[in-house]
Amino acid sequence: MIEIDTENAKALAGLQELFASATHDASASMCRWTDGIITVTLDEVRQIPLEEVSTELAVGDEMLTMVVMTLDGGLGGSMILMFDELNGRQLAASLLGQAVGIQPDWSELERSALMETGNILGCAYVNALTRLIGTDLRPSAPHFIQDFGVSVLQQALMTQAVVSDSLLLCEIGFHRKGERLDWRVVFVPTPELQASLQRSLHAAP
Amino acid sequence: MVGMGQIVSGGSPQQMKAIVGSCIALALHHPRLNKGVMAHIVLPDSAGRPGAPGKFADTAIPRMLELFKELGVPAHSLTAKLAGGANMFANSGPLQIGDANTRAVAQALRTAGIRIMAQDVGGTRGRRVTFDCADGEMIIESAGQPKKTL
Image (cartoon, rainbow over all chains, first blue to last red; front, side, top):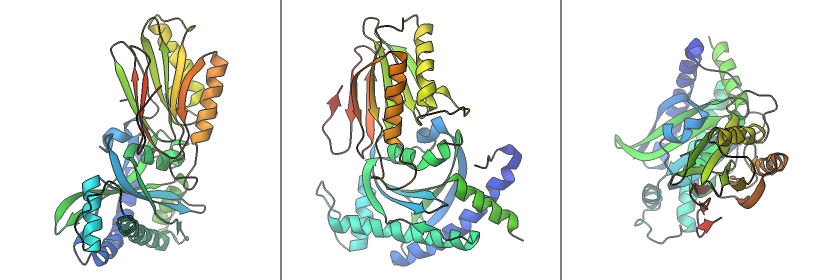
């Protein structure tokens, strides 16, 4: 894994630029999927000490609704789309053109709407990153999970935790007609994908 | 809140909390002195890698015993309760380490001669764990499941 500290802050800035470019593509896809209502922006690419992940990300200890996609193959990573119950329900309702669900269990349609959102967003990122690094990345099918956000993040961060006490991740925010929404995506590249991204940055003219 | 790789010690009436998925929340307790130490273990084996002692099963338990010593608590009579070790992405996704974590913690406890009083491990769900130093109770909350007390 590449350590990104003050010594090579340039590398972090490079990754920020690279993910900003991928986020631009993802935002265009998201905008099409939601009839121009929702856009996506890159908040930050940053490193967080292992023990501070939950507090730094302010995930809290509440149950969240999440769509998880992983990248299979040699270069991997995970992407987690996170909502609280109300925001997830509101997104599903707006995509389905129906009232916000009130049943305790999510309907198949609501789950599908969120999974498709994750799929569209994830594939847009994967396509953009594939172009940038010149290596095929294969996204998994999206998984719908309702659980503690921290528990799911832990699993996504494991490949980095094996080699470092400092974890690199990319945070992405959502906007509706310019107004910030309480949804977010966390993208966690594996050490192998980080190395590949760094190589492509160094190779860029 | 006990974060990933952290170890926290305390006594009655303190409570300690951790949220775990594939990680393990391990609580050691001395029932007569009402002292406890909780670790949030991330990986099974340090294999010589640097890192906080609480990050790995093989280094966390010796460090927990040192903390008991600092509290003036003898190592004998300690009991263990643990929770976590889930496979959060249901056998797909990166590094499914939950089972290996559970086995490594059980082995390290055997090596240290500490008895496991109760555990709630495995599955595909995260757990919110609350450990009470006063009575050694461990409360487990998990999505879609009734609350459990170990």
